[in-house]
Every structure is written in structure tokens, then in C-alpha cells.
Image (cartoon, rainbow, N blue to C red; front, top):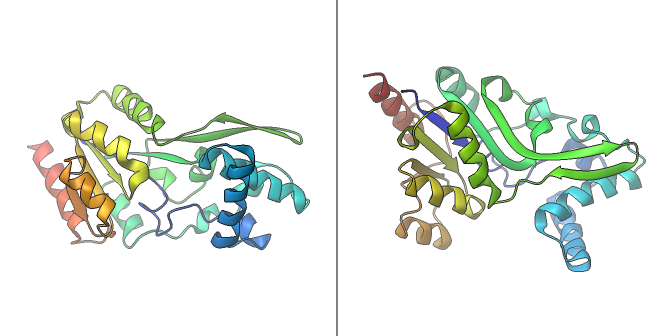
Length: 231
């Protein structure tokens, strides 16, 4: 049976922990300035980080007289920067079933270079009706587990053939669920004290450098798994 690989997007496939929307850069918002504003909204509105992020983006569009649309938000999606070797990796393993589960926008990822290699992407969806905007579905850290269940059901595979790849604490529920179900959880990046705790609690099976290049730890691991599943 073929393996199924599920990825987080930002920070896992890309070098950045949060989306780098071109429209926000055009409006003069770098990451520190954006996060400062999001933090203010969280304190004022008493809402979650993800809700504040979505609402802040639409506020910035309005303030700069930019159309509230996915076309605006998805500007520059084809120019997304990926971690080393990512595109070649997906080309090499294009016969593997790849999925992305992210708190970012589904529509944004559907416009990236990575999307043609994916079976599907499950993430946040927004409803835009003129100047009215609302969150149709918000992918949170906890909801990633429900998304994983959906992927496993739709791909008609067993958990032992499922690999989840993430880059941080936002993936902790996914790591734990996959591991407990008999799949493999892989962390990409440098170990922090918090990640070390997840490793010690056996939520994470492997820690690899954040590289998809030929010969990298991740590349070699996936190559071995693909080979074993064919035999």
C-alpha cells in the first residue's frame, strides 16, 4: 500500500513560520508590524490568534482601498520561497500521495507551485460577499486532527502508512495523534526545549534538518519508506 505524507505548510515547506502575503508587504506591513497589530486585536477582541490574523488582513485591505478578494490575498503565491530542494523533492516523489493541512488559506496554496503535486489541501476558508467577510472554516491546531482523519479515510490507507511532517508546537496535536495511531511524526528544524519535551513524550518519531534536498535526512527516509512499501 502506498504511503501518504501530510505536511504543514508555513515553516515546513517554506522557511517562514507565518504566511508572507505580498499584499501586506505592499501595504507596508513586515512581520513585526503585523504581529503587533494582531496582538492588539487579540487583547481588544478576546479572540484567538488565527481569528485575529484573518480579521487583521481584511482590515488592512480596507484601510488601503484594496479589493477584499482572494485575488488580492493570493497575490504573489506563485513566487513563494520554499525550503531547499522542495520542488525537486515533490517531482521525485510525485507518485506518493501528498496532502497539506494548514491554518493558512486553502485558496492561497492552490495557487502555488507546490499545489499540482498535492492530492488535496485542507485549511482555512473565508467567505467574501462584497465588503462583507466571514470565516467559513478556521483550521486550528486542534482541528488538524479532524483533517488528518479525513485524509486517511479519503486515501483509503492505514495509519501505519501515514507520515505527518511539521515544524513546531502548532503541530503538537497532529504529532501526538499520528504517533498514537501507529503512523510516523517528523519534526523539521532545530530542536528547542519545547520540541525536546515533545520528543521525550514520544509525540515525535524523527527530527530532521529543514531540507528536502537530495541526500538530506528527510529525502533518504522517504526514499527508504517508498522502497519498502513497494516490496
